[in-house]
Image (tube, rainbow, N blue to C red; front, side):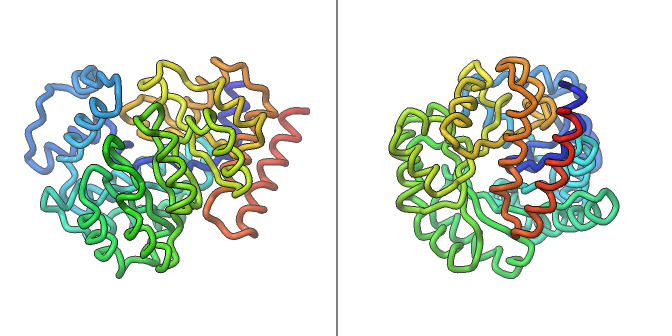
Length: 336
């Protein structure tokens, strides 16, 4: 199974580029930028990754961004993720980035997006991995700040495929950002929002995402299984659900393998992703492997999950079909 997963062509649709900041890179950038870290070694930093819920994770996550200052830092961050992704047979990725986490520290929006974009271009040329960029708004900041950052992005619309919503969901429902997402839609961007696992008012929030925001995809969304009507809506709209097994384990002490199996049984387009792999110590292959071991997923089920990612990726039909053909050819040979 390990060999099968490692060699399977895959897409990743839910990965935060700031969440790919490995401790070794963090120390290298801290040294370059003369930033003092409260840890003596990368191992000590990893030992501090003591998350048990979303707020405890976010506290460490945002602190980690402090080493990212110059365009070349964002380039290196993005390049190293895409290099890792290519080594895991990820052929396509859609990357989240959190500009508010940087502009609030005095780093210019242009610096952030230019560094990321240049790395994406180089990775496509040199590594053969295609990627697109999703601007995420921090939901625990104001809707006005989100709108300001959307407008900052206007000169770079050709570099973006969509917008998303992440960070602390408590008291920050999707409706708070309805106008921001409506404008993004007018500008031709795709829409997705996080509906994290086991959050307060989660079914109400999933309902808002479906009915009021009218997203093109839902990030996480596991709790939709608690409502048959929500599941029916998601299925009718053919919306993808970007599930992140290893990060789920930090919140609900489970890889949600049972829930993912239920999604497949219901015909929902569940996909597997790594979320913040440097912090959760698991990239996409490790997520697939851990899930398979916990839930005893068959090769056919793993192929379905991988295929779902290509189906709900924000690609044109020709590109999707090309990737799906590669996956199907791999599956026919590997399963036989």
